Image 1: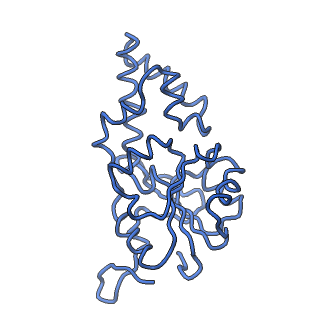
Image 2 (image 1 turned 45 degrees about the horizontal axis):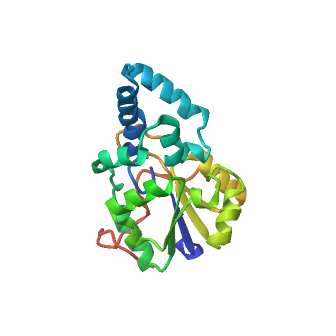
Length: 227
């Protein structure tokens, strides 16, 4: 699936790719509505109906991913609410093995996420994955979400890369489409971003269920790194 001799750089998404999307789904679909209903003195279903419509109205924009935006709009401390359930933050299976393999193979590895800087900081503190990465870039630093076609040019200005020698892994078909349109050659979709959710359709991209599928297997059947 991947010819590692033709890859110099890996750009990896965070939520749904390296980390289980269950945390984010639970947070926005359950935890926030409960706290919003309590703060407004309304029934939970009314809170859900209102919030889901507000989420949908700006889906895919930078504001949709912005902790500060939702704190202002909902008059809730979103960063603090995330800390209340941070125990649900979890690394996907085989991610650390894969990141070790990438490092031992001499590839540069950079996290590229739409997550707000506050969310990124919380998740790196919880998972310690930043110790395996050569860098981490939030789309909020660049002023555009990954779905936007101009995002990739801005990314190149801070993390120079050859689109023909870069592997980009994400769980979002819309983001992968944006990367493909920019010219990235090597794309990979995560099929089950939420381990408690359904497997997604591949949308025509090469796809994996988890990172064990990218790890080499030795002749004795033991998975391990190789250049």
